[in-house]
Image (cartoon, rainbow, N blue to C red; front, side):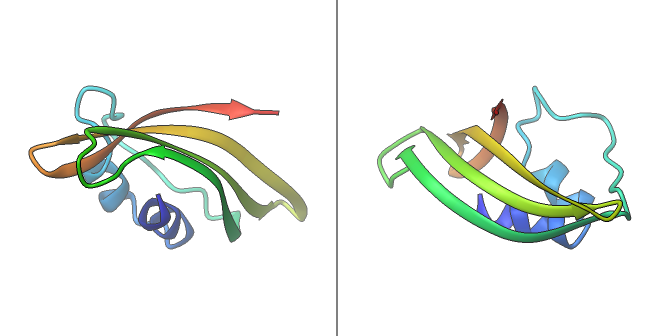
Length: 94
């Protein structure tokens, strides 16, 4: 989760696509140059340990876009396949 946040903050679309589950990943991904990410808070985790094949992460990511502040609050789902973790999808929370 933290590495994907860093990739968003650095506009590293290649890393984001490589860590997205192949069955769910978009064909392309373009970053928004007006989006500036400031902070990531991990609120909770479930699974994701060394013997797990799935896990969830609830987080809040703080950003600024167009002069306005915002917060992305999401529960993200991950799966491990062949020893690698992949982002599957997430539910945005209000």
